[in-house]
Image (cartoon, rainbow, N blue to C red; front, side, top):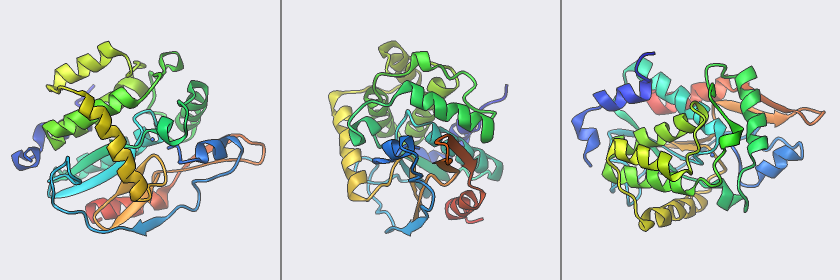
Length: 265
């Protein structure tokens, strides 16, 4: 296999750039009850982000796409992969990703259910992304997302490029390799590979990012912010049919609008 697009970008990204989850708030239950809480969600205007440091509220790349998401959210995995693939095809090494914490176990008040996620993964593979989730293993489902999210927070403290790479690596290990990313050995392997050290402050950082998401009216996972717009789950349409079966479809129009906001195309 060739080099994954996200890794290729981190290898080629300009030196200047390195300096410096889809489940809903509530609609997890709505989807189980058969209500489609995602359809009809469009774009909303947001203010242009300020030019502070990553720890204070924004990345320092020339262009950024910011997303609040849970590392355990399969819809986010699809969205990030499609975004990175498009960025790679366009050669847009100037566009960085800031993947922030939206811990659904905090939002919903309970851990994500492995069987429910497995249902989502099966539908996504059959209807949208047969190229993804090849190694997904519900038996290795993490008990919590917090340690992995904390590792991502720590990685962004090293650099935006490291933060993005770790955020994508964690999802690859979970959804493509079937690894439990709440396991201390797995996390140690990732942190060692990318030269990241974590502390208790990073767990606090996860909750701080969640609080910021609440303040910014994040709808759920994944919720993307570009310079002037925000998009909730722009790659997929998710709902249940009249018999209560989960249905996931590509959102071609939403994805095109999202790509235009990200890359100006």
